[in-house]
Amino acid sequence: MKQKIAITSLASISPLGNNPESIWQNYLSPKTLISTKKFNGQNQFIASIPSELRKELEILRSSETKYKALDETVLLAILVSRQAIKNAGWKEGDDFGINIGSSRGATQLFEKHHQEFLETGRTSTLTSPTTTLGNISSWVAHDLKNNGPEISHSITCSTALHAILNAVAWLQSGMAAKFLVGGSEAPLTAFTLAQMHALKIYAKEESEFPCKAFNLYKTKNSMVLGEAAAVACLELGYQKNALAYIEGIGYATDDLEHNISISDEANCFQKSMKMALQNTNLEDVDAIVMHAPGTLKGDTSEYKAILKVFGENHPMLTTNKWKVGHAFGASGMLNIELALLMMQHNQFVEVPFAERQTERKSIKKVLINAVGFGGNAVSILLSK
Image 1 (tube, rainbow, N blue to C red):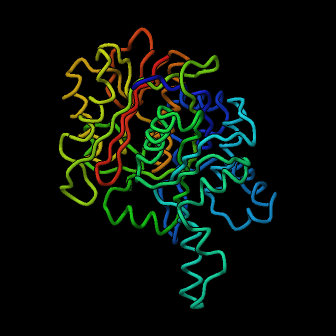
Image 2: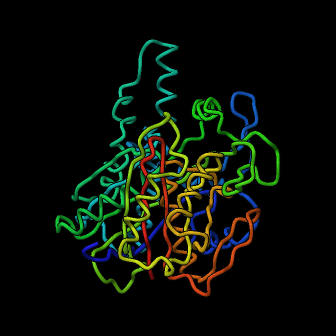
Image 3: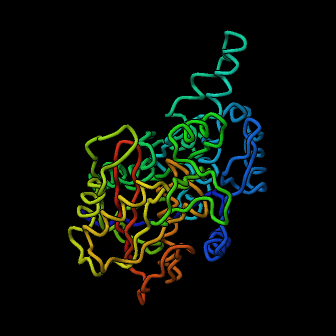
């Protein structure tokens, strides 16, 4: 990294809520936020946003005629983006960059319009523009009256962290002074759940913790879907209101051995972590927020990669998917949020059913991982 990048605010909507204090208190609770809901007549494990926040979505949808046709991924992104720039002290009309992506995109609207097509042979006028992936950043820019560059992308579950990579390149090149980055995902649909079941990776067993992310002794896959949107404001160099600094970035892609899996020892993570840590003493890293989706291969391969890089004396390890599910493209930014909160409170959030770890005296440097289908890993090193 030529120069540190400051994170001057982060805003989110997730099963944890949208207020930093309540989000932190939810993290301190050993209870999961995963519940069940019926899809096509069958109970499914999901992690959904609180009902009061869904009401805010509907208020936003009704606030402007054009918003009535938008997918929830877009509405969620608009709400968190408004809060993020307010917290950072940015103003509507500032020319900052926007890069907000999604793994699935406007899946709710796409399924709705496709069903209409199957039933009538026709689609509504706005079907195409409201289901394109570029929808998210474009509408956020419209809402914030922003004239900077707008980028949307899908890089599966590492989408939000890839948005950070893009922003770092823009900021360090001098082509932008500020960037709003993140991910938004509203994947709780019958069709999306059916796809996860077809992959045989979805949780089925009733238990206190349906998603057993980072339980290295589990014998069955236990991934659970969650919905969320989270964005961060990035600025170049030292900032008085910085929550933390991006000190290192890393990225890599595995050679595909299978359509959905990464290599047994997550070679992509080994490479991305080493790249992010190239100017850092390994013993200075206090914690790692793992991707750990709750699948057999996903959890164990990432753990093996960490052992390859750090050895047995590795940092404290945690993940949040046992609590909030896997929000696909938004999950990496939720990992960033957890890292920031642990640094702010100087307190490690452990996985309640994982083996106890030797706690560090302080949390000053945290490594964050994310990876998705295709083995497209990203690692981000944060420091106070």
